[in-house]
Length: 239
Image (cartoon, rainbow, N blue to C red):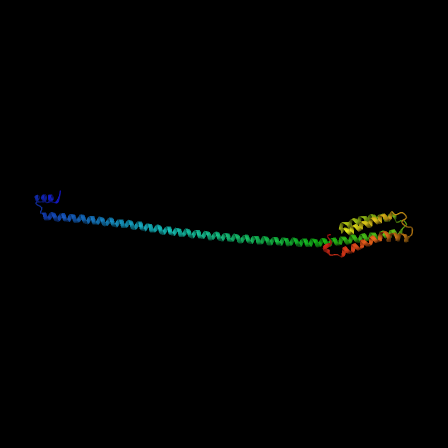
């Protein structure tokens, strides 16, 4: 029903048109006010939702930024810790290598010192052993000369002395050098052959001649060799 129809009905009911218009206007104003209020509430709610959404977005952004910063700080701390750990390992390894090298150097030095001391001890032992063997051989050769010059009844004594001389000659060859050992062997062979010479000599002069001709030259060579060995540098004793 339009406004004219409503006015007709109001006239029939005895309601003044002005009252009806005023009521209608009031109602319209109320409806407009309600619509405006609803629109304002809708706008306010939309703004509130937008503000909440923005606040939430800002909060998420701040939180994500904080998380990223915290993660970056954590990664940086881990990297620094790993770098420090690697550095500590490298320093420890370097210190270990240095300690091992020093220990090895000390060990080598100790071994070299022991080797030098052992060599010196061996040189001293060899010098003493050579001197003792040479002296014994010379003493035995002196006994051989005495028995040879004695002549009568000396055959058994000469054989016994040659046996001793042969044993000592082995000692001389054992302590070296080869030149002295070879001369000692030659002296023993010469002495042994002299005792088996037919007509060794009846007089002491003849036996002296046999000594001077056949044995004394080899004995002189042996003595010269011994002197050379005992006066040479100790470092050559091991030849």
